[in-house]
Amino acid sequence: MVKGPGLYSDIGKKARDLLYRDYQTDHKFTVTTYTSTGVAITSSGTSKGEFFLADVNTQLKNKNITADIKVDTTSNVFTTITIDEPAPGLKTIFSFIAPDQRSGKVELQYAHEFAGISTSIGLTASPIVNFSGVAGNNIVSLGTDLSFDTATRNIIKCNAGLSYSTSDLIASLTLNNKGDTLSGSYYHIVSPLTSTAVGAELAHSFSSNENTLTIGTQHALDPLTTVKARINNYGRASALIQHAWHPKSVVTITGEVDTRAIEKSAKVGLALALKP
Image (cartoon, rainbow, N blue to C red; front, side, top):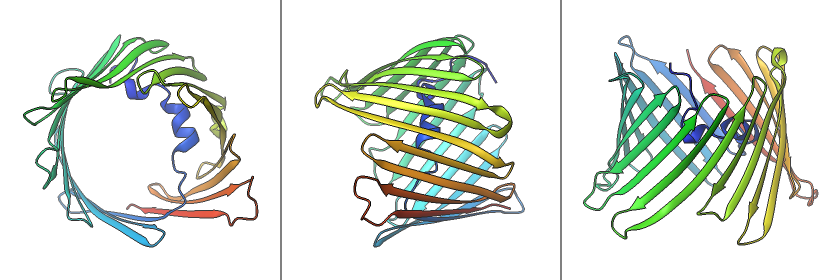
């Protein structure tokens, strides 16, 4: 694997994962099984209030080619074919959703020691073209993320980001929504032995003049159990505990409370993932 600045989506990813990943107030159940030929079949169901969503995903691998086919409850078929390393540092991704004839897309990703590039184009007569690029190294990197609609000849997305990393600290600054939202994030490893880390994200919207601050932390109670907590400036506090009773089977319990309306019931989410 090439060591370098990564892709644009990697800017601020550690802080986002700490603050938002695995938090959910729904109830989700996932089961993965493997056939004798190595095909992975994953069935999942999610309860969202009065609604229940389900899907079945099949993953097939042959050398450096991976095919993912997912069918959901609305009869949509999501297909993704990934070719890893057809050339050094290159990855090709082809995806489409049936029956949506305009959903086809081809994406190329290239990782280099001093750059990371991702570009995609829709398979339509007037496609949307996406380009993101990062230049730098594994310490300092600068990147941009653009989308151009060939039908209207307008730039529909224009973002920029800067990242600074050391062995135990990652700081990033991004300008999103065509310059309307300025965000800064911070991720710091306090203790590698216990996976203890703290993180924060501050976002300012110039159009609404609003600020959103979220801070959080995580800590491993033991090699199989992790706890996380976060709170934002609007008074929403969340916590979760995640336990792996099997190397690939995990149960996650999440709780969320509005500290400014403590009389309201707390939201509780449960996620169960089972893998052999």
